[in-house]
Length: 363
Ligand SMILES: Nc1ncnc2c1ncn2[C@@H]1O[C@H](COP(=O)(O)OP(=O)(O)OP(=O)(O)O)[C@@H](O)[C@H]1O
Image 1: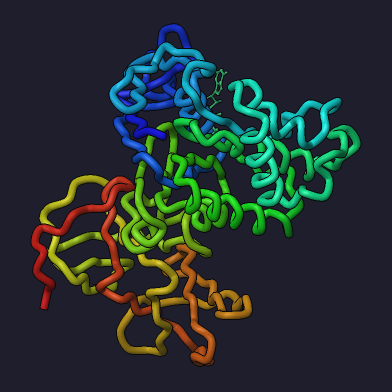
Image 2 (image 1 turned 180 degrees about the horizontal axis):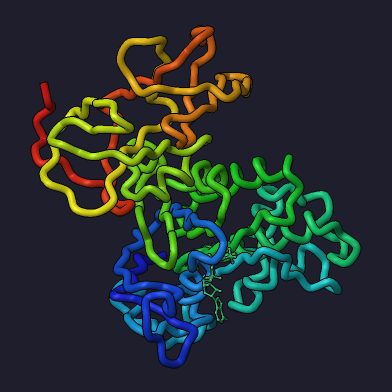
């Protein structure tokens, strides 16, 4: 196990990149702590696989260095990096039994037969395949084969990191939760550094202690699931994390007041002069419905009951706005206002969260 550092790393697939759009990864410096459980989250094409392939050694970056501890591994091939990888689709030997498949990475390392046997039965139990250890992989379902791939990824204890690239894509939905829980459990027991690539926020938030969110070739925020929820640093994080995501409204910011569609909204801190496109962002959990009185004029479009709460979908000055109403709280029949909670109203400038000018709360 080791700490992984990406130092001033950037990558372009073009021989002579010109503008920023030619870079699949824009320059970034990032540390993955030894023993951390990370999710690398973002929508399709944002650069997740490119980043993972650079860490694993499948790809040499156009710029910057990859360090495992103090060791520069930028130009080392995958085989010399001591990492385990699990891909989207199963990688198993069809002619081998499940047991032989699981034992393969350990045999390659020349481990003693009794050590291999013990480790294989431990991993088989974890992935729920103890009963089928002596079956050939050929003929097993895609689900079962992917579980073998997960098992093979986890069987070595001496790896620097385990990298998962959308590993549950082919897994049956009801098994996904179970396998994710097992991976989390495994992380707790063995403390491997794990990096788990996904575009699914539920997978990311349930698996990882730290979530690294990518957007358009950049890491826009790295933090705990709670930090990403409480204070999204970029509008993409606000929108991508949460269900529904953060509401965003164009606003003019004047000190501790936001002017939205002709209405004044109080902020809990004051802001200096801001240049660029300014918006306020409020999660649906922190908007309250009202009737007349203060707040932003709101037109209700529909109400969705999702079991433990209701989502009221509507519009403020033509922009989509969603409100989460907790179970047991009434929805006013003619709700026509939304009232933001100032403590959870963020200000964004050109999509990045602005820092208040002062830390003191406005009166
Ligand atoms: N081999 C390649 N040659 C040229 N461009 C590539 C190559 N692989 C990826 N790209 C481009 O680099 C960018 C990042 O792609 P990447 O596959 O890393 O994203 P991703 O977030 O993993 O997406 P997905 O979830 O769809 O795999 C995209 O614009 C993609 O088209």
